[in-house]
Amino acid sequence: MTFPSVASALTIAGSDSGGGAGIQADLKTFAAHRVHGLSAIAALTAQHTRGVTAVNVPPMDFLRAQLDACFDDFDVRVAKLGMLATAEVIETVADTLQVRAPAFVVVDPVMVATSGAKLLEDSALQALRTRLLPIASVVTPNLPEAELLLGRRIADPDDMHAAALALRELGAQAVFLKGGHLPGTGDVTDLFADAGGVRGISHPRLSLDAHGTGCTLASAIAANLCRGMPLADACFAASDYVHAALRQGYRPGRSAIVVLDHFGASPER
Image (cartoon, rainbow, N blue to C red; front, side, top):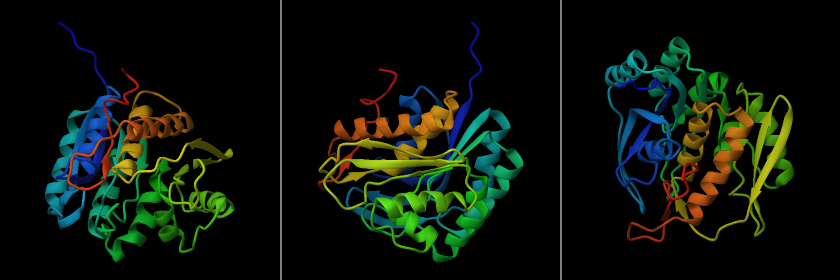
């Protein structure tokens, strides 16, 4: 028998013991898109649908060992970055990616969990701006994360449009700015900004509280890029996928938080 050689997507992020976000959501998303998924765990969390109770960052030599193991044996076409809690972690990851140079880097600037728990040290914010955004093929902040990165409030659609352009000026090739936190009852609009300008995609607003949407969106973008999609198409298809996964979501924990149905929304079904 002969087996095809395939490209892989690597997630460098935090582990969610509750299974709804982080590394676990990323690997489910990769599998749902029929992409081989690799992982380097940059943080361990004790976490469920009601919150994060503890975070443990592994030693940097172990993080580097995980990264080297992935790059030494696999064709890593896309690296997706999630929860990188400290400046030291960010520096370690950025140094590796600059040397290994995967074709695409998707940066989900995880700063605060859905529960409100803070997931990024203050000292890491500047490292994220200066080390990760300049190597990002696309950065995927929600509005609170964009406000932290830019140091200003985003209160309406005009602010959001200006913020998408301003985030590109920090160095990323493209920005996919998520609009779910914008006040209102109408459609939710996400904005894609690159050298060609700003375009939007809208979906009906769903009246639910969900866990893992940001991780899933970024990993779906990574999977689509691994499959050969152009960057803008990869982002818009990922947005459609997250909306479908939310519509089919379920509540596995004792809270009202919805976890996405990664496989039920698979584009490969």
